[in-house]
Image (cartoon, rainbow, N blue to C red; front, side, top):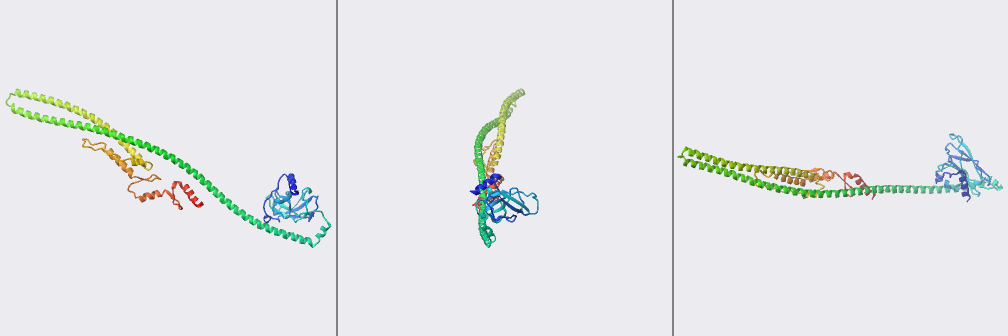
Length: 453
């Protein structure tokens, strides 16, 4: 109770707690401050003046203090009362400096236990300690004891006890230091594990975000795939319609050409018949008069001209019909050329997306080319059908790297293709799981998780 009152009163007077620490005795330097003229006992009720010398081994600071400790103390927190140590007037002096400080009687202990002065710096480390003393009234016995051998023996006994207690404190300090080191190592390991866990959480969140993004992209690609299939189906229907129109036009053209051949053949037959008749008429009319023969010749000539005019009209009509059919054929050829260009563009586009749209690649079967059928001008769509079949065959034979999109020809060996793909992958040395080379951070985190196990 007296110690608490003394501490409270001293704090009220100084308005601050002195700096203390849990540093034990074996880490203190008692020789840096030397206490002088310390009495064996001080009379209660009177002020006590403490004299001490600051050696050149200590640099005094503003928060240094002098405390009164009960003998047997273990840390600087066990002071009974204290006073702030005044700074010397010449702080830069390299010689020892004499200082003094006065403790008021009100704050001093009231019992007869042994106490000592201790100089504590602002780090809470003891820099000097005095010999023990008591607070009691002087008696005649005390005066006699000073001159006897008993006091010396008592002091030696106290010193032995203090030394023994000091050894015990050193052993306890070593044990506490070892425990402190072990706890610090466990704390470091816990901190490392916590950092690793935090890193794994961040990586997990990133992977989840990437997974969601890939799901969205996959959904979008499926929608594009459906659209491509619809467009491809529509394009096939258009090609079929154009092919049907072309066949009808070819049939009509063939019919017109056959008709023209028939007319030409009939004209030749007519000419032959006319020539035969002319010969017969000349044989029968040799004896007729020249005028009749001339008239017959004129009539025959007129008849031939009339027939020729009729034949020319019919031939012109056939030519006009042929020109109309030829114009329609040219239009069909132009439309067919546009369709073939569009097919080529679609085939190139499909070959670029063959790794992502495997279903489209498999769905594309070669379109059979219609037979020529002995047409006079041939089938202009036969080349388009061949191009479609060849494009589908090229797509089926393409090998494409799924990572860098590099395309390999069909005749490349499988081992070379696998070596190329393997060069983009990182394999875990512990579980043989593979990762893309672009995801090296994920690979490093995966290997680190094995090491934690």
